[in-house]
Image (cartoon, rainbow, N blue to C red):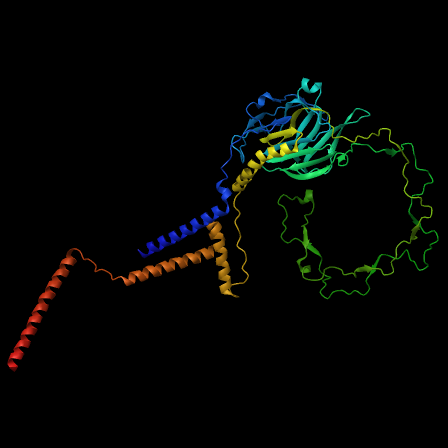
Length: 562
């Protein structure tokens, strides 16, 4: 009975502690309860030259390509066999009903495009390109960039492929050591009419985790540009200075006909012609000589060989002396040499020769005939031109995704192509800023909880038992408030001690209560009860007789006295 009461008290105490810890954890992390609470998708009312949220009529705008990929580096024919789908995310969904364009096949070439309602001419305007990328299986090796395609007759007559001329390529690309956000634009040489790709120097790194990332490119008429990821600027620069090769070629180039004169002296130093070798310079002296002062160590064993036949080696059973010759066991290091300075014939060691100087060479002096480094003369660059406004891109007529990736389920959404950075920011607030915190909370909730390790106490038990115990208990209580189970794992000795104390106190209290309450007489059953009744009856009769006798005797005595 006492044991059951103690167990019940201990269980109540544990339940109270866990309930308190759970309540406090809920107070500290209110988002945990709201991870599954998601807003519902509502299409934006913003307008732009091109704005895509992949609503139910998306197939009227987008056309998958099944063309063959143009690859001059191989004889194989690559076709765009990758499939596309519009669906909600399956990993860390942030908004209910929010669908995106999804790459469905791993290790495949994918291509899809959508025509703009009318061509986008960026001359004298700001260009804003913004879209979301959600690599639901992470981005390990593959591209997730988009292309803004050049407006021309071929764009409307042929299937989209890697050979389709583009104006801008922008977005993340990751594989192996490559991890960057591309920004490439094709620039037309005003002299030759040829196009050349201009690649951004030092591009920022791409985000590769499973939550949505927002990529924004802003190109302004003053030739400046800005790249933002998740609304934060990660790269600023200008089209005229931050691309390779540069937009404008050099004004002057080296004259290809200019040759270095035969008598041109470009040696900065020469040996001193007036220097002579000192008379005491001995070029024949060796680098090392025998150390004549060395003596043989006392424990050196000259009679012992450095190696001996292996005593454990045995002649192979199939060894034939006539065919294989006499068998000789392999040798092993002599164990007697392990604990001494050495074995075998002793010879004095070598030491560096103090008289060694090596081969003599004349010291170097400044060359009086030195003319400096030679360089060809400069001439005017016949291919020079100056384009002060490369931001006036060629007109654009469509958008396309033409990628190869090892991961499937890459999702694209909320594409904005237009001229207003403010509208792009507003679209971000309506979409990305809503879903991203939910996705991050779900990602955190999916991670296994890290078990805290018990920190070392500042003193040992022998040094200060009171401080040692107090620090252990404080740490256990702190862990128990966050996770009671983890607290028991990290500090089992404290949990056991506290449990024992609680149990002991319960037993003491129950024992005290039991001691202060008189115990009822046990009830006897059967023959024992009958026998006890008879004994009591006999005792009562004898007691009455004794009392009668006693009374009569007293009265008789009193009467006699009278």
